[in-house]
Image (cartoon, rainbow, N blue to C red):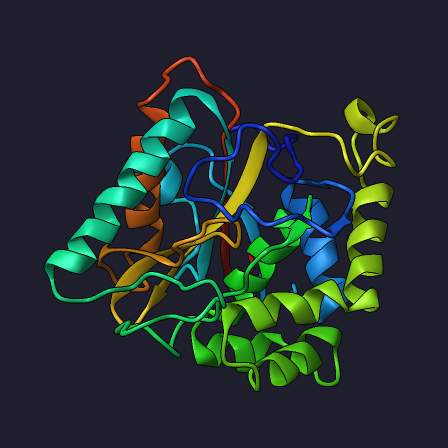
Length: 282
């Protein structure tokens, strides 16, 4: 898995299931590299000596066995548009149909409110209306939905993250959580600093072009109350709930979903998988 891809906001290739409203802000893309994301998390207030991102080199067992357990979250960078996005959108529709068949309507209304959802209130989920901000949203979704002992251990007191989660816990809808981020100048600057300071040479001449469309995007997989969820603030009907899982099976089950996306185009190489996991030492 390559770790030097760069994710910006989705442009003309956006799927029919994604948010269609105008985006008022645009940020610089964030590179999908563990070293970059770990430094960024540290700035936000995560003790990365205890928890950090690891490269998942393959979806095969030998690679998964290299990642310390239990994994807190899985972040995927993937191509948008083309065969992969068509497969992903089809899978999303299938999952939503299963909700309805089971008598559970988990769709999000125009105000960003979950209706009759059995996960309402248990999954921290924010709508993304900022272009190129998917890396930051992926990190927030990963940390906020980690096991409570992880959050209590890893978050530093009076950090931006601790204060933000306390503030956003008072907002009932994903849309309102997203609006808080839109109006937070501190996180915008932290994101910009991380993206510009650690940008690869490949994009060093493009980092000030916030409005340029690209074709990769972040999403996060988490375990909440016994189920696997995919969290992507640009998906209109999110969160997407998959089958049952556990904290120890999260990495394996998330990679199984990502494998289904990969099968849509076996020649596509623009995938990166990162696992937020404990640092167990040497």
